[in-house]
Every structure is written in structure tokens, then in C-alpha cells.
Image (tube, rainbow, N blue to C red; front, side):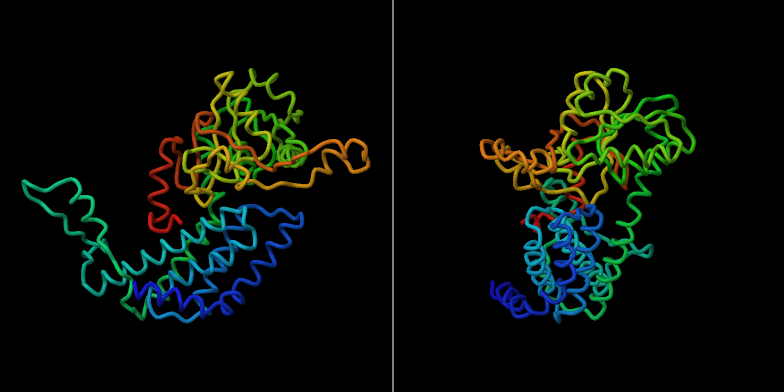
Length: 374
């Protein structure tokens, strides 16, 4: 307990250095919050770069101190945009990278690596061996208090590799396009998604198909998607959101992007996607979601907590202030995202492969550590 409290105190001492390290990130979020809504990829990449700056500029002695400093920095980063879970996702991922780098240094010191580089784990055997013993044998407790000279270099290298993985995520998703899109199909999407755009363009290189784009009012980001696809020679039709149900019977697949993938397999997707998914369910049309792994959020949403995960924009785009008489007698809420429950989703296509919503729990255990869930 004393070591943990000491590490926490050390994190507080480094508060000025942490704030200086994340200053650029807060400046970026300020521009984002003022209406320049950047992609979730940019938020994820800049968060990891801010964490890398923190561990480079703040002095620490061992992995335990560094993890407390990163957790403290995560709270500072979170204040920049409290309703953006991707910031917390990247902090959790950085903590897992620290744990993995520490385990590698510890294994090297103890000589527990096999000739092929894989870490050897001692597994108990015998007639009285229980399943619990087998499970616990693969995750021995570590206190992270041993200092290693190579730890900082290893962590920075892992973070740099993860940033490269972030940058390649769209390419890795689009490379699977031919497995899911076939010739002469009719695809529907809603709004604009960088991953979905690359996914459809990749498939169009070898397949001929048509795309129906719902405009996703009031942001009308579907107009940008329709323009981008038509420039690539893809047969594209732009429709209003109210026409989605009417044309769904002609559609073979629905392919949409998402802002977040929740722990239950549900989505926080652009406003209008819930209506598209409901129409697809009614007409038995499969719904495919293109989402990189950094969008995976270890949070189980409740009906009374969904507003905490959403962004509310100005209602002036829906009800102009010029209509003063109406404005004074009404209350208008303009949410940016819809929650789409997992029973409306058939398949997730991520940068590491394709999975059903029921497999999300397994991906969570691989992407984040259980001790970092809070």
C-alpha cells in the first residue's frame, strides 16, 4: 500500500510536467470542440503521442511509477473532452503496453525465454490440478517495482509500433473488402465514414456494384460520402433519411462505420444509423460495421447513461434562432450519435479480422487489462 501511495504522490509532484506534455493535445481538442470535429483516428493518434511525450519528459524509476503517472495524465487528458471515451481507451491501451514491456524485461532478466523468443510459462500438472490453477498459472502477479534500464526504450518502441498500427488500420480494414462485397450487389450506407469509404473504394477496384447513401441529416455528411464514391466511378445514389425503409428491400448489405464499439457489441454510430439498422433487420438485410480496434470501448451502456457517451450539437441547424416564437416554446436536442444495440449488427470488420458481436468480450480481454478498466 505504501508503494502505491508513494507512486501516486510522485504522479502529483509531476503535475506541471504532465500538463506541459499534454498542452498540444488540449489545444487540439479545443479546436475540435469549437466545431472542427476531427475523426476518432486523430483523437486516438494524438492521445498516444501525448502519452509518449509524458513518459519521455517526466522522470520515473520503475513501471509502477510510470503506470501511475500515465493514469494521472489520462485524467488530465480526459478533462479536455470528458465525453470522448477514445481518450480513455488509448490510456488503457498504453497501460497494457507498459505491462507487456515490463513482462518482457522481467522474462529476459530471469532467462524465461525459449530459443524462438516466446516466453515460457510453467503450467502445473498432476491428477489434482484444477482449472483455476491452469488459468492463474498464465498470469502471475507482478508488482512492477523492479527498475530496468531498457524499459523506457521498449515502451516507446511499443507505442511507436502501435501508432503505426493505428495509421494502417483503415488499409487493413479495406483489404478485406472483396470477402464481403460481390458483383452486382446493392450496398447501403449512412453518413460519411473514412473506413467505409476506403472499404467501398477497395472493392470497386475489382467488383461492380451500386451504393445507396443516406444523407444523415442534419449534418448531411452523406453528401460528402456520395461525392467521394461517385468520383471513383461507383454507381452512387443519394437518398433522404426518410426514404431508407422504402428502398431497403432492394439492398443486399448495409455497411456502416461507427464512432465506438461498446462492450456489449452495440454501437455509438452517427445519427440515423439506428433507423437504418432497424430497417435492415425488418427486411433481413445483414449489417456490417467497419471499425478499427481503437474504437473498442470497455463500457456497458445503460439507457440512463447513453447521454454521457454522446455529443450534443447546437440545435440552430435544426431550428434556426430566427424562428424566435417557436424557439421560445420548444426544447430541441441535437445528438451526434445513435446507440445501435448488438442484436441489429451481424458482423464487425476490424483491422485484425472479422468477428460477430458476441466475440467482443474476447477482444476486450486481449486489447485491455482488467486492472485498468477504471
